Length: 169
Image (cartoon, rainbow, N blue to C red):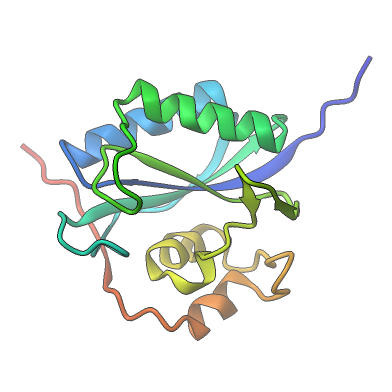
């Protein structure tokens, strides 16, 4: 019998079109079904767009997920969830219903055409670091050898990341 290799993966979810909070909640539910057990979840954060600025603000959150999926299986499942929720890839860094980024998959270091781990720009983006710091401040980046807290403290990004309270009806 093959032993299952359980790893903690950190995902960043984002949405800036449609009912952002509802789309993210649906993505969280599908993540639990398709990827693994969600062990930690950050608050929602509202963030300014990065890269292409002429678009609506994003809602972002980070998840810690225990999974037995390989990095390639993880990528395929994340992309499948995006497609199930209506994601269409039109413009790099453009507006989107849902975006699921794999930030870390255990301590794996991967550089391939379709997947780079850890996420290559995460240390330069407050919208990644703020929610990640909330759930994994002491996690050590396997390439930069610094904690998430230290990366956030040194981050050059000045983009505002503020907690978002979901309006009640």
